[in-house]
Image 1 (spheres, helix red, strand yellow):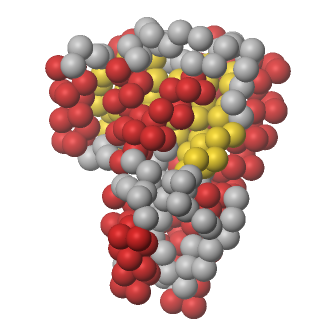
Image 2 (tube, rainbow, N blue to C red):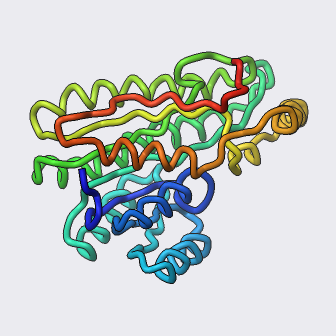
Image 3 (cartoon, rainbow, N blue to C red):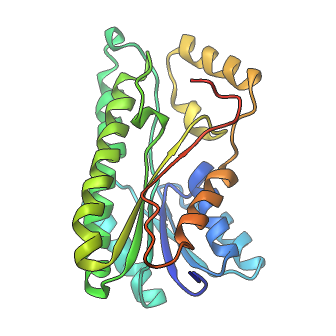
Length: 248
């Protein structure tokens, strides 16, 4: 399926996987709305995309705010005329043991990782259902399939969005011809680990990164492009993507 000329929204696009996906889609001729809170970083990426011959725009967005989600979609549709692909990628991963009671981090993960996905879905769905076409990508994780010590709350959020993505697919696919893909990456080299305030777990992640070759954001971006370019009658519902040496 050709995706050149289509329009995409990518949340969490100021770095890491979101940035990689935005750049990859733009390279395929997709007009991309890059959404995140860090507007200066977005503008720099947009400049790169435009200099390479692509089309992109920066959208200031805190996914925890429903009104900002709606405004970002309105701005993107106003500028490019439609919306075809929505990549719900914004997320946080501060590791800690439950007994540490870092409750502020727990609530922030739920707000961004779960409510953010719900908010952005609610913002894009009216446009996609009206068109009776579109593709929604939900970024889960290996933590959406397995549970790890120190990641209990993060795993809970990623299990939640994986379940939501499958239910969404069942509801909007047959009725509105909207495809839904849940991406579940393993270890990826991103800024996600910068959110870890527990020094013990941060040390463990640094040691893990030194012991194996992590995936790069472009690896996940290529899986998104692959699923987006599948024939219209094919919904790649789930992609579980790991580094070859990752044995857990």
